[in-house]
Image 1: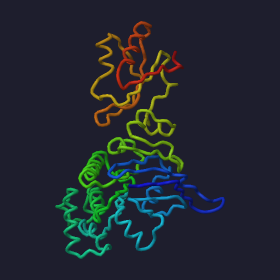
Image 2 (image 1 turned 90 degrees about the vertical axis):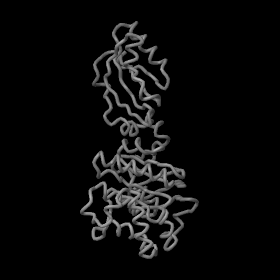
Image 3 (image 1 turned 90 degrees about the horizontal axis):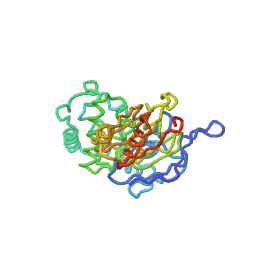
Image 4 (image 1 turned 120 degrees about the vertical axis):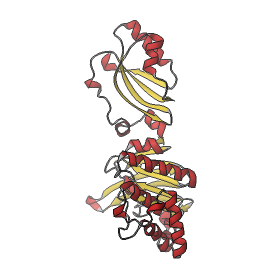
Length: 333
């Protein structure tokens, strides 16, 4: 669906040039929800704006649904953009237009007659659960409602791709969950391909199947969400996956092991079964774990008993469990 190959974006020239994106290559499959994550200044928004040529790449290739977008201009580019819609953190609604007329706006630009545009807008308002708010102005809507209108507007021209640039960053946690559920439902029901740009790993784990980590304008990791969560390979990956990670230097001096959960069931309590099956109690010194579709990912630091026999039984038991890896922390041998 989306093929990006060796894409670069540079602002300015000479000594003052800023290389916002460097040698970006990634593939987004048709019908998937793909995440792009990074800290502030990583180049996320520049990348998503290059995907619909709101920013034209300095060089490189961008193919959407078999069409080389970077080769287009004028009328051809405007037509291609109808299949690549975008929603924004700040909603970008027209304040002087009602919810209904905000959704009609891209249809008017596309040359639809008024009756057909209104019918389509009402259909979309129902789809996003706002059929009773068609005459409300943006100032009369909550943040979540504004984003639902923005999503409906983005869907007006039946796009194949929906780009979401920090679409939930301005929303409270409860509203964020409802918007993510809406995006998942639209992906399922309409088959629209969704690209999610965010700095929040919680958004990635909730909605995406694959993810690319951007740092300093470079993709440093990409793959399945569960693989990145279970074993991030870079410092920035570990910082994003475990933002509240435990500092080993701060732990008490004792025999410590780090266990990693690699996709086993979230509903099998390891520590409790260890105590029941082996009669061994361990100390949880730190943990950063997540439940993704009923599967456990993340890491936990355990302090083993001082008795060497108890510690050996605990280690043997943990190592025998499926989808779990364990390593001793050398500084605490």
